[in-house]
Length: 253
Image (tube, rainbow, N blue to C red):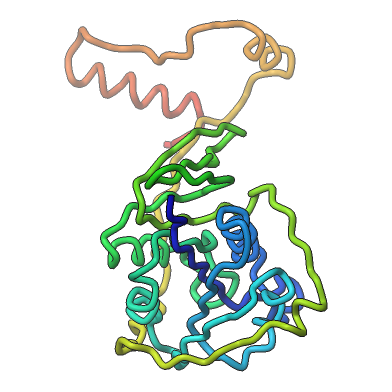
């Protein structure tokens, strides 16, 4: 059985406190998972400055060679990445970048450009005949198993339990190779800042009960529904609404 061709996309991260450039931990987890699936070295691709010092951190984490597609700042990396990884069976990346816009849309846009399924929030993965079976993160500690036919795109979750080993000798032996983009990188869409619009605040009835009454309400299952007035004239119904608003201090007239 032929092993699938695997590529990992890495980005330059940013320390949340100091702002110093570093490797992205989420992308490092994707690299560790890819090496586990391949049983050894995998291809690693970065779109951006080939001279970024933070890329050498990925060499220490197991990347033998990093192909850096030279995309200028302010340019969209989507088309350059899509053309470069089109021939791979499995594309792995982190959920979102630590620098830049950090919107988390790149895995979805890349899968759309490649016409491939995307498996997000991946915690672990296994190769099967022509497919990949993953364990996916869900809220409240839940997990589920999701499979996809190759080729596919996997976005690794930041909580994936993978061992990250930083080896200085690998960092010294690894290489970063600059590549020219095979597709034109379009400029990013211009963003504009707009003033936030105020939203009407929902009025809430003032709490006038004693502490004992609130405690009883918390431990007993009493009905909290309001009164429904079905009989009477429109004037009587309006007077009932006005009386309710005055009782709860929502109006003062």
